[in-house]
Length: 98
Image 1 (cartoon, rainbow, N blue to C red):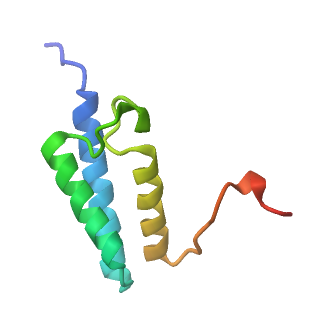
Image 2: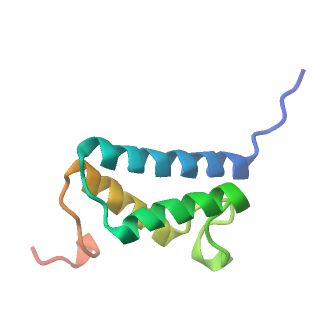
C-alpha cells in the first residue's frame, strides 16, 4: 500500500501552532512576564493559523507553504529568547561595529 505524500500546508500549520505553544509555555515556566502586545500576538497568530492555516494574507510576506510570515517568525524567536533569558539581538549582525 502506497502512502500519499505529506500535506505541506498541514505540516506547516502544525509546526507553527507547536512553536507558538512552546513559546507561551517557556515564558510561563521561566516566570517571564510577557508584555500585553506579546500575549496578544501569540493568541491572535495561533487563532489565525488554526482558522485559516496561515497567519498572513499577503503572499509576498512569506513563503507559499509557510504558516507564519517572515516577520512573525522573527517576533516569535524574540519572544522565545526573552523567555529563555538570552539577550535580544538587534539588527543585522553584518552591520554591527566590530
